[in-house]
Length: 315
Image (cartoon, rainbow, N blue to C red):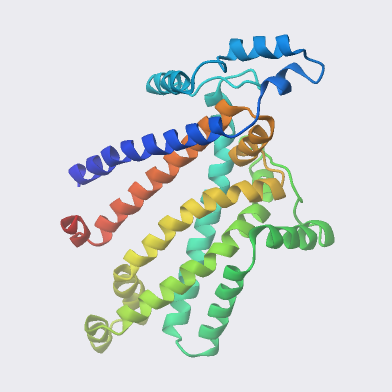
């Protein structure tokens, strides 16, 4: 297992290199100049050129790329042009908000999705099955931002139960944090819950029709034990695959939800930096989120092996 994990970690290095290279090229090839944002509207061409030289923007692209990779090898993501602080501080200060939103949404979507899928499989072709799948279909069909606005109007404006936006750090007020994260997390989870529910139902139906499950039932084993101890464990590999993919979707979806609910996460930081051409923040933010996504996929691969050791032998 240790060799398997080490191999997966080493394979992540070229992936991150390609991601960082593509990110760097896209950012620096697109038109736009941060010097006007820094100097203001009344700056003269000489002042703008002086800022460009000071930031190193007049250097060739290859030279800038080598300088950036040199910084990365030392663990330095660079310095923001506009925030007057390091990229690492700016990104990692907001990262817990994005990760807590995506993590909370993943837990909600996984728990509710798996329970709905199990219920639909065990009660196949009943009104419970149809109700669970209709709920899953609604979740799949509704856009994040639309559902978020509906949640704000219903629970924030009409009922007044939860705040319509803003963020309370968990270190300051735990219940305030729960209130501020409930609507964004439910919004993000609802649209992905349906994917997990449908996959769980399909996988569980395959397992429930196998001989070892029939044998367990014939021996008089309790239905709950058969479902959760035997059937669900054997159905977990495809479910884990879906959950791994959804984790990336939730991370990217958090960008939209942060904007809808005014959460100061990494997504809003990157979007604001794109609008102001603060390239070091964009590069650093995208690289960190990409690294998290790669790391999540490694965890998913390890879970594959945990639930089904044959996967390790096949690779």
